[in-house]
Image 1 (cartoon, rainbow, N blue to C red):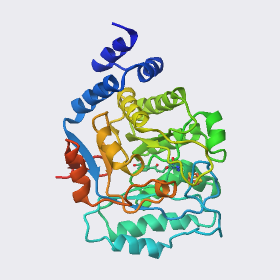
Image 2 (tube, helix red, strand yellow):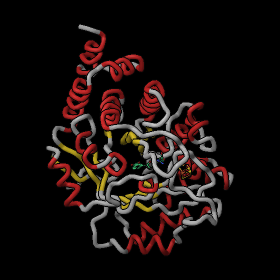
Image 3 (tube, rainbow, N blue to C red):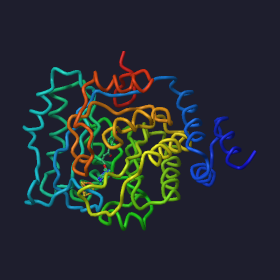
Length: 355
Ligand code: V47
Ligand code: SF4
């Protein structure tokens, strides 16, 4: 038995593999061996189920004081195409879909220096007034840190106040790649990886579960990727607060980073190693909006168990060239999962299955 086969056997037995072993595995194993192992792990956990959520995305502003090089979405105040939704516009967007059984509202936006703190609280409260049963997954750790800095509050206090106003969970955005040198090149103004992790830790300690992500397929190496996964796995050992990991394939259009984005095999390898290495994070999401529907269907065979949701209407990936639909009907979403050979199971933000 060679080294790679020994690592495969170890993971198959449910034993944790090290950073070094993960690197060896992802570089040396064939896509078939890697995929088979990841598939066995996801199937042991969830059989033929593939989860999805009936959700609505709201990107409340694209005005941002940062200028991450990979971002095609953000605008400077006053720049052509800059927008901010008023609370009334957001209420209208929620009301316009009141007849649909939406379970989750996903809210993220830029770091807009002109929005008062009360805007964020009001936004959450108004959505809960209109749809009391909905779960709100809102504001990345980057937005939480921005509010804490701007209003001279601790991140824990911001999280607590937003929680009281209706925040149920944090999305996983803003993690990018944690390596400090890489971050200098990708998003020099963004909070450090350590700060991102600290804010998620605080959220977990307050009983707010969160997701986590990694932006991949640009200028990072496999070493950077596995280091990033290890930081997530370490925090999860401490808190258990992560629900889901989402590897975000870089979308290359309309931004300042000169990189291509991952190809199909790189995407599948990334999904598979995530499932194998992150033995303590329950779910791995194949985010169809960035991956493409066909690659997301395949990812279900390579370790992913979640397909995200109906979305309507995503702006961040589409600004960077994603050529997927802006949303899917439940019927089509379920059709894609079934055609891939899996059983669609509707869940809420906390991955509680709908009866
Ligand atoms: O933080 C920005 C990324 C993220 C590009 O938690 C890009 O369930 C690819 O985090 N190419 C926002 N990615 C999206 C996000 C997310 C999406 C869906 C579900 C969840 C969840 C979270 O998008 C940003 C950034 O990392 N991003 N530009 C780009 N050109
Ligand atoms: Fe701003 Fe987020 Fe875009 Fe960075 S990725 S420029 S923080 S909106």
